[in-house]
Image (cartoon, rainbow, N blue to C red):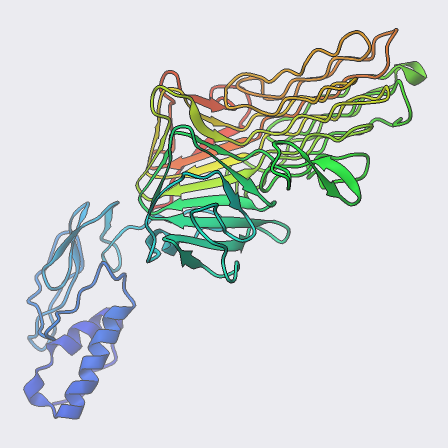
Length: 498
């Protein structure tokens, strides 16, 4: 028999299946068997099935997939889409695809491809299990979760411990993200999960994610205090959430690209207030001071980033002249292979990526500018945001001169106002929320008082990618910044499934 002419990948598979075993010796048969298997290995595993006994299957042309017969009379081993959601393997077995059945090229079940640092194979990582959070703290450097999971041996490698995977990955040259992988997970009513260390956070649920309690992406200090102080470069500044910037105190701190502006005069009294941080919108302007003919307050922090949240960046810290600005809200990427449920229809719960309020002023000086809200990126085929369920990335308010800290962004859709300062200081700006996406501008110092108020922090950014590329929250549910408000701080996109 003459040797077959060179052929491409799929014709090679059909021609090899077409040969009869009686024509060759044992060694030749073994070699052909290996070649037959290797011809199928490169295809999607769900799309191609090699008969377990080595026999061939009789193929016929199908309307939704590739088919054909060998030129020497042998039958083909083919896969094909029987309809838009059913894949038929070459041994006749069928699979109902979670998404679509793709007929082009090698027919296969479509898979979900999350954005950023999340890899598709994380959705099929072996050894994971359903997890219910009963504890409140997770470490973004080591992967440890109190009473649920120990730290990784090597945080840079994916390790599954107690049924939960973890790995650190790069967002860009300067930022990292802590990725936890679950079979599914639930945050029950009454449980709040928060984070230590400064990497951004990703939760990957291979099937469902249910958040009835709260995932809190606001800053917690090393002593586990909400919007507390940590030492950075020898100066105590208000912490940011995971992936967010710290507050600024003069030139100290690591506030991020949206930091508010500093007044020119910083010593000692009667000075202007600093600006609040920007992110999804501009921050608030600091109030004018009493010195030098009511010198102008610090400028508003500028917006940055983009609506896709790739790269995933957290909020920025507010400026601080005589006190630390508030830290920025954290960055959170939530991926679920089937569905995300937020809220139970009755109780308030959800995801809070609020910025921290600025530190209180002292010695006649103004408070710190508010931190901007952080980032929330949700990717899932189906989002079920129920009544009283909330997704929020609100700004923190400016700190108040005379001894009152600003208020951090809250789990709601309305602006956060700072306490009233009394008659000696200018009023500080509110944190952005809902349709009021800018940080609030502060008031100037009163004629008989001391310093101007501090600007409020702006909203952060929210992105939801699903199958339709759009979403309308039901009555009673909250997305803040509001999708119906001005600007593009909350956006929607189509989930990548192919």
